[in-house]
Length: 226
Image (cartoon, rainbow, N blue to C red):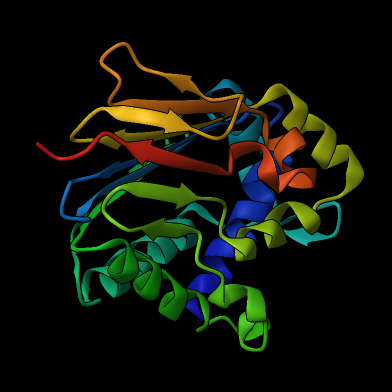
């Protein structure tokens, strides 16, 4: 099993098991286009239920991955990403007590970040001929950033059963974009600007996001460099 296939399968099961998932998508962009991306999946509110189901071999016809398999998948993903050009300081924190998973890495440019993730994702057989993998979800020109959701991430919620999808209504999805200089304006009317004007946040639910990908799409314009 290729590593990306293992990760996607694991995500499907973990999302299906929890009634409340908290996802935080946090990216910092420096003036030169380098930065840091952080991604957190928090399933702690359902840890008792998840522990009981992970002891099973299958659930509703789906194979339930073992903890050792999940750890191996995440560790291999970390190694593969760390080997990519323009990517450094890859960290994956696996908390299997509270079921909180944190990922972060530094990148030299948004182009390097997207190229690295696309190369890993296209190792997955089901995405080899999917044009959406070529979609750029980040565009930076030094004065503005346009961001959206990678198209291939739609594969996860679209594969869940309706009863599993209903559980996502209780979750939260928070998108945060940080900069080294003040934000001048932004296009998404649901976004909120931080007090120091150097970060933009959008908050929704995984359930709403699965049908309306535009919810966290945004073009953010920065004040001129001094």
